[in-house]
Amino acid sequence: MDSITFFFLLFATLIIATDIAAICWLGSMFIPIIAGGGPYVPTGHEIVKDMISIANLKETDTVIDLGSGDGRILIAATRAGATKAIGYEIHPGLVKLSRQKVSLAGIANKVEIRKQSMWKADLSETTVVFLYQIPYSMEKLRDKIETELPKGTRIISNAFEIPERIPISKRGKAILYIV
Image 1 (cartoon, rainbow, N blue to C red):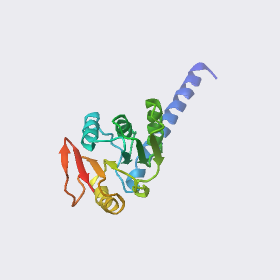
Image 2: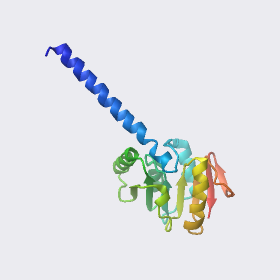
Image 3: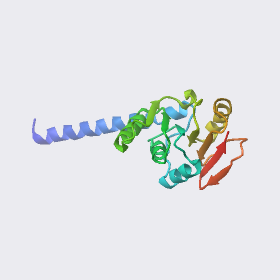
Image 4: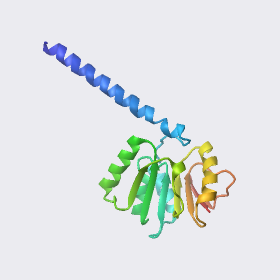
């Protein structure tokens, strides 16, 4: 085999491998939609700051992010003082990415990423819930929130309101509710 043929085969193999990886990654982006949630759209850093600020986190807070994506809100919440943060994420690539980011941030003892649907999340000991879901999910989440969250729990939503609930306050796109 001459060198031109070798490099052509190597190049073709790399293109095919890259295509397969891209198809798998993009295909798995539909998992959250099929499971009843929204697609992954990262929350901008300024919005994260607003969400953390409006949450008024305390050292006694246990934070949950329903659809935690790359873990940025969980990391910000623990840096802002939350004792424990749990992320529920169904996308396997995002679970791996967020676990890596948490490890690199040196807060693996405070943050847990669960590869699990937000619909199966245990909310019974939560004091703060972060959300960035689309309207049809927010409607279903309202029922979960009303039946499972303890009184006084703060809910912070990015951009989308919870139907039939009155916000306590807003900061930018961050919307605060209290159960």
